[in-house]
Length: 134
Ligand SMILES: [Zn+2]
Ligand SMILES: [Zn+2]
Image (cartoon, rainbow, N blue to C red; front, side, top):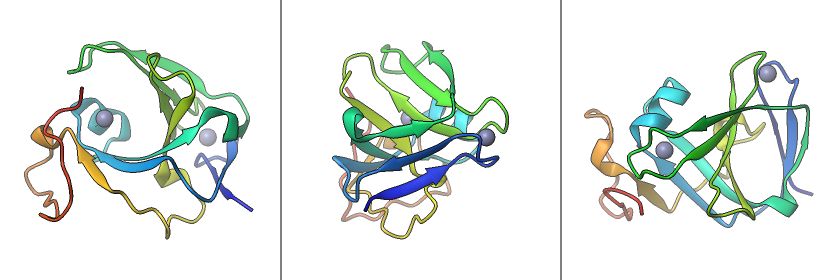
């Protein structure tokens, strides 16, 4: 089994396992810019469990609030963000879960960079949040 997804034009497709290492919502400004949206929804997946077809383009995002660069992989044909990776965590990728074919079991357990969330977004007060992220 597993979960499948693709970019909008389907030049890039992928498979991930049923369960993620973690699932989160990121409200950092750079995710907002890249997604063209209010936040990005992420699933941490072991790199060895992530199988990809097609060739995403890499943008190395250096102007981050954390100061650490973020590798942002996206489809250069249709623009869908596919995943991000952090050089400090070489064994993990952070999938952009809006690209999953079925998003019904996405279940984030934390909100990060809540300090820069958009004003209209309300985070459930029972949900853990980090104002920033180390
Ligand atoms: Zn595409
Ligand atoms: Zn972010």
